Length: 239
Ligand SMILES: [Zn+2]
Image 1 (cartoon, rainbow, N blue to C red):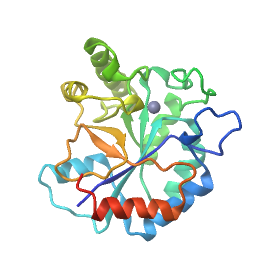
Image 2: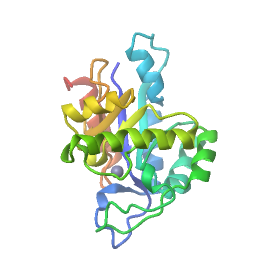
Image 3: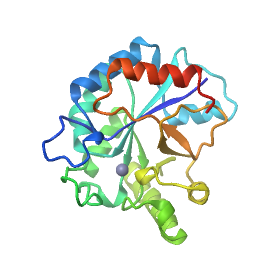
Image 4: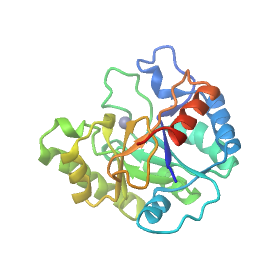
């Protein structure tokens, strides 16, 4: 069984002054992608369910598994993505920057600043079924900072989010998908059970759980193109 993990950032129309339009998918496109995934036999699962299967559990899903993830925790997730997911009985995992709860994408100083989910709304969304993971404390590229700094980003974000969510998160998303063997080891030492990067591939049962790969639907990706990517990965890739 191969696991597909999709990576989104903002579900919104691309503003004219966006510096990185590749991080936007329009609400219409997103809804079409969800409908297509359901039509192709995909079912959203949680990281917990994948990890249980991976450690020897049996496969109890009737469909192709997909985890839908959102990096950074923008409020447009709440406005545009979560209603579309809920309507279809689908789940999602949102990776939060612990030091910017209720703030903005301050780490992207050259990008337009967008609001991030605040603590109250995060707790409400958790009660509604959204899963949350850590996306570090300040969104620094972990493989490019000293090891002590990287460890602080991993462990302090985990404990701060643990206070917010009543349990420390099990999954970490590497900021900028920047990682290395050392950083993957630190993620394990900090107590995470899994971590995700980019990479554009699906995952096999043997894939390193601290280097899970994600496929990023780009704003210009048609449904036909998404179908080709998923088909190729499922049947021809050796990942
Ligand atoms: Zn990010």
